[in-house]
Amino acid sequence: MSEEARTPTPRPGGRSARVRADVVAATLAEVTERAYDGLTVDAIAARSGVHKATLYRRWGGVDGLVADALTASADQPWPLPDTGDLATDLRRITYEVYSVFTDPELGPTPTALIAAAQRSDIGATALRAFFAARHRQAAAVATRAVERGELPPSTDGSEVVRAATAPLYYRLFVSGEPLDTRAAEQAADVAALAARAGLFTTPGAD
Amino acid sequence: MSEEARTPTPRPGGRSARVRADVVAATLAEVTERAYDGLTVDAIAARSGVHKATLYRRWGGVDGLVADALTASADQPWPLPDTGDLATDLRRITYEVYSVFTDPELGPTPTALIAAAQRSDIGATALRAFFAARHRQAAAVATRAVERGELPPSTDGSEVVRAATAPLYYRLFVSGEPLDTRAAEQAADVAALAARAGLFTTPGAD
Image (cartoon, each protein chain N blue to C red):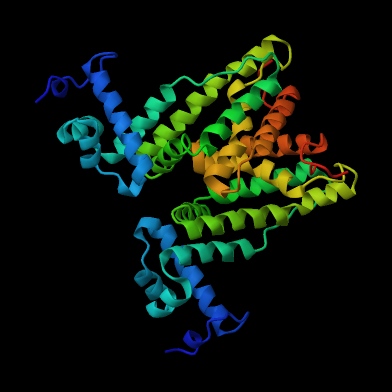
């Protein structure tokens, strides 16, 4: 048994963190190539060079591996615009979502990962945390708009970001309607307009 | 072989239509109880009383059965509000979506059906047609708002309805965040505000 196997608590930057990074990378590659139904712990073990027994012990199996890959993705920093105008910032954010998911190189991995996460309870929990983290992180564009006086003080920034991006994810993962730049801009503009009108203020605040 | 088996073209109201109704009902019951992974043509045959060979011939298999159940659901009329005010009409529509999907009796069937349709190409095609049909049908609330002078003449009614309902489906089927009446009302109000501001007009029209 390896050193890592006797050290269940991940140490950032240490061997455990490196093992996790290798396993996450292998899970992402496998889910992209084979989708959820083709995922096996064996293939992820072979691809990552991490022993199968370690994968089962630390991640429990395929669903735990998918969930952790999503958690690791949520921790990745996203480029956050700061153009001085809320609508423009939101257009940058929705354009980024559009660009990533419709890019033939970049799109298949997050698409497959989100679809795979929907297939288990642990994946669904990670998915919810993933989107909540993204909304919270990008909420800074709304916070800055509040500071500029562009939005009411009690605006919930996560709600603004959710409103701007939800129509894109709806097309990508629910209705299957095509996603184009016009739909991305429209979603940003609708959210910015509603935010300025105070539709995303926290009830009871102010 | 039954009469129906030699009559591949469905005749509305005839034996073929009754067979389809039985098969759709059985598919909906099975997908609700067992979800996509538990669906079998055998069980749908047993439940509907329609011969397995007929199911394979007319529907091709489980994916075709799921797709047709969705197509049949798209043909079901939805109650369409006509309160004389766009925001109120849209609130009624989003409240209806909220009510159906969060109801412990009513919710599981459409939830399971949509999740199952996402699992095959033929299901995804039916899903896209299903949502497009719903948007088109409910677009009447925007058309009436145009007639009342509440919205710009070139408003795309399907876009208004999509904008009002997308945030609900995003919560239900993508982010997994809880759906409550406040979120349903907010989505309707955001769409109504944006529609009045002309954000859903057809480019090049007017």
